[in-house]
Length: 156
Image (tube, rainbow, N blue to C red):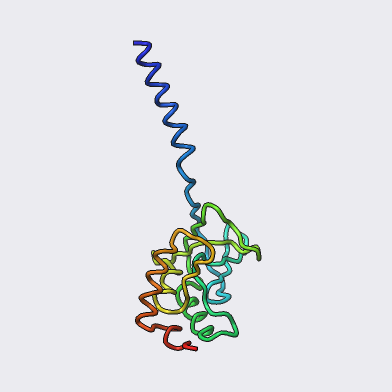
């Protein structure tokens, strides 16, 4: 009986160790208030009593001197400004070179980055690998095919 118990404990310990070494860490999830929209892919938030800039993971919206900047910024405002958001981090990267938090942002159960791409206000940003890249790429192909937003207005 002691041998069976010893084997069972050994198997349990080995399986726990293997699981902890092979299971990737889960992304962290936090709640924040979106205080201001900087542009179509950058926000300021109030997180744990501190103001932070957030760069939304996986999207690229037009910059100030680019076609559809104003529309993208206004759409981001309508989706997020003043609202409570759920922020989800990547497991391998917390901030960008400008010290902005890198996060997926959801408001009212909507993935804001995916929604911006879906409506043609932003593009998928595949240059930095992220878990939703394939999904965002598929959404972008549909928006482009349907000539939504910047895909209609910004043909150069």
